Length: 373
Image 1 (cartoon, rainbow, N blue to C red):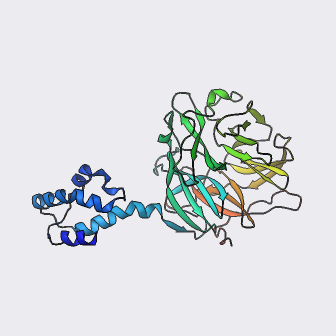
Image 2 (image 1 turned 180 degrees about the horizontal axis):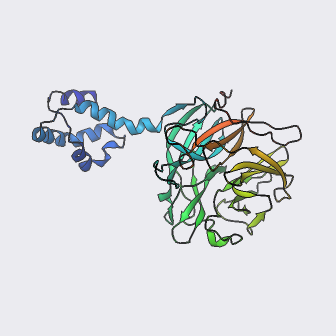
């Protein structure tokens, strides 16, 4: 590559006619097969140099263009506190511990400043071995990966079973009115993920307890100690159902959970024999929780876990244990460049338990958490 660039530098008129070059060679920015692509565009370079008498350095342009996509995929983010990611808006966090790393899956808010509705088209993936230094991976899943869906990359969660990773997502259906839940699958937690069943797992016409089109959102999933998997989800009404071992079919009827003032964002986890169901309550949303000795209930309401997050009407939590500590992962509207309810940002703070198993109220901080060791 250096030799090719050296040859190009013998010409004093450089390429500035970028749109034409990209039109003829759209693969030019893919970041792969650099040397072969340089050979392919050599003729274009000579042609454009003669015709347009251009003067920018082709060598530098090629070097930075071809490496930009690859560099972005491997971007390292060292959190300086909350929010942990500040170069883009991230929402609805779902964390999963696998091996010696935490994988953080988020939605991606892209609504412009003047737009006060959600605009989300893809999900994002980050990983960390210490909760502070995060590696950004290429987006592993997009709404376009679901041929039956319309748009809206809303809240989601990933879980592993038998060497496969299953990603349950809330998304707008293309033909059945309202929100739905789809399932994607991959061979590793970074993806790429693909539609697992070619249709929605849950559609709005399967739940009729409340007469809204968005009650089938915010999936959360757990595999119990006996191997039985459960899916929880909902808005205004909390639903749950068993999953078959293949993780892509329901195994029995859809049932409801009786908890007070349920709005949305359920998260199910288990610790020391207790099941915990945390969820967003009222509006603007607080995170509250209930406990049970049985995943089917009855559930005992325990009160507020997390107060209203700053500058955001919604909240959405993820709870994990990692390297001896418990973490509460959520979003707020805390980035000072147009952050808010439709441009949210993921934060992390510590979660602590009392001796009786109840959870202490989370203290939201600007400092965030320290490196896990």
